[in-house]
Image (tube, rainbow, N blue to C red):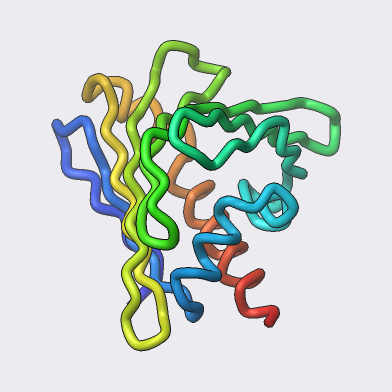
Length: 156
């Protein structure tokens, strides 16, 4: 059974991703909120990631840029609404290439026998906005991002 699981039911404006990491929640949370670690795992491998801004606190902002080898960029940003280390993060997410399509993301990290089950639930403003994200390659990008994070966490 694959580790990456995506539940995206037709006609709904949300989806849920689950992924199990072989690391405790504290390590997963740190990797997700540490500006020095994020470039090592965030986004597909074909891009380098630049952390333009990262303020992991309630009301704090974040902005990451994926840069292609040819110099092309894709930027993403949001605002943190809840930081409950090491269990939960709630934030907005917006791809700057599709401004105005903001989703609300809730990430829960649950310990199970020294491992962490991450559950990310994203809610979009409309079914169409969610479908646009899905058709834009979100599933492949998210899968690769989680796999890269798993590889980083395996390096003790």
